[in-house]
Image (cartoon, rainbow, N blue to C red; front, side, top):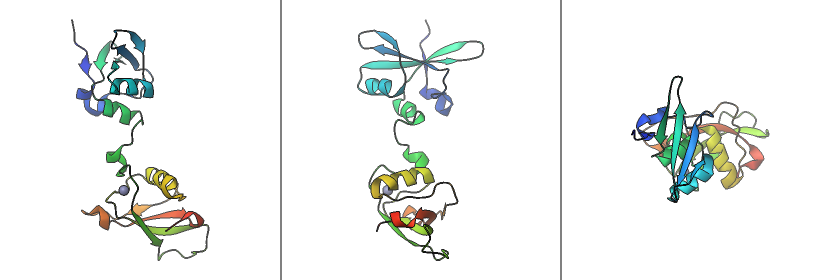
Length: 170
Ligand SMILES: [Zn+2]
């Protein structure tokens, strides 16, 4: 009898999001169902089931145990990924001012300088824009250019981005 292999031991290689992966839930009562998604995550986290997956290969398929639920949830976008985005899930302490490079400060979208006093970093402008929309109603442009200085101290980093002027609050 072969024990299922460990999905965690494959590192970042396990194709959690692949549509061809079949997730299997084994409930505490032994009931077997096809699983996946958030509901499986919630049940596994609550200890109501153990989650397995079949990773289909070209010549053979193997059974894996989903032993790192955090990795599973991050891959499926069920939990926020601090490492990737640089942003902790909290109320950010943000300072901003109009960039000295902004030639038209009365325009609807303006260039601003941003500092994060909470110690977060901006690695992904979409995630930052999403946080700021929810927290302060800011409307940050995610399509165009943005940038930031990199240093050892995240609090000293200065970012530049475009945002809708009227959405900006102090
Ligand atoms: Zn923060």
